[in-house]
Amino acid sequence: MAGSTLAARKGALRATMRELRRAVSEADAERAGRAMAGHVAALPAFALAAEVGLYASLPDELPTRPLFEAVRAAGKRALLPRFEGEALVFAAAERWDDLEAGRYGVAEPPAGAPRAEPRSLVVVPGVAFDRRGNRLGRGGGHYDRAFIDTPVGRPLLVGVGWTFQVVDGVPHGPGDRAMDAIVTEAGICENGEEG
Image (tube, rainbow, N blue to C red; front, top):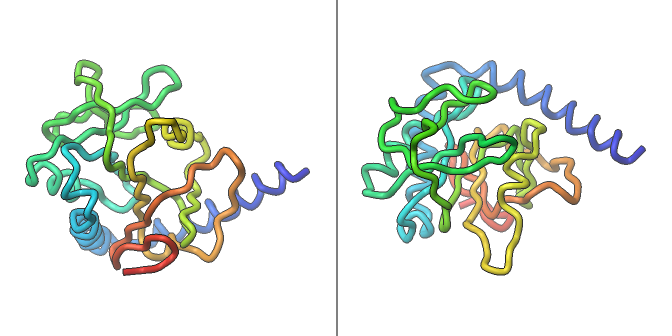
């Protein structure tokens, strides 16, 4: 019963966010994507990272191409996810235009691109976040499984989305991976505080 209640609460929040994302104009989305990229680039972890894990946004997500361009302009390797079977792995991408349509319509590095493990910083998509770092994804659990805690640690996980995607509480369960920080077009929210 608890599992079905959690699934229903997640489904309701996904539906609400889907409508809000669809209402964002293309011009507002582009401005927000540039602002978010600037905030991510201001993170201390960004300055220290040799590579940054990020993703190619879908049409209803905060645009990530400006972040990709900021990563490359800073001389860092951009690592984007692709599916290999059911596993989410990361591979290097030199140019945005080299990305190819992958599973679920998400652009990803081509099959021949070398795999690489993001060790310092990974930008993660989400449908909704809360100030405690809880994240609601699209429901596949791919990012949750990709970044489990290990004895050697894991990279800083930064969820990105529009300000309206940061809500009072995100329904979550034991298998849901929390973010270390949330970045929106308005700024950075770390450890429960905006800055």
